[in-house]
Amino acid sequence: MNSNFGWNQIAKIYDFIAGKIDEQLYGEVIESLGNLDDMIVDEFGCGTGNLTVKFQKTAKVRAIDYSP
Image (cartoon, rainbow, N blue to C red; front, top):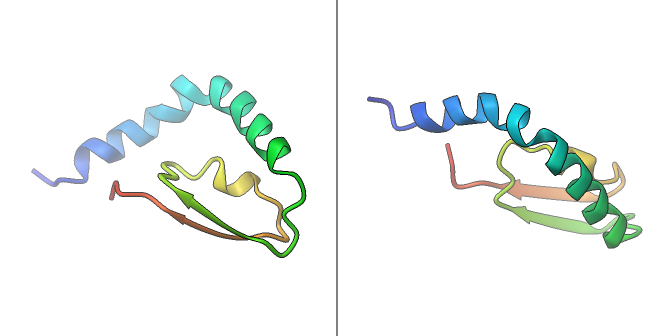
């Protein structure tokens, strides 16, 4: 069996299940960070990348996740 199978299946339903909770939390995280113009943001454990895309377009974001 492909080792990616489990992660791929979970990722498909993760947003549906946790989406509402995550959206509120992501908003709070982004707001607490303040202005990130020209800053480098390292995001570890980015999962499906939903928080990653919320960072300001002027920030330089590097995101990594262990899951395939």
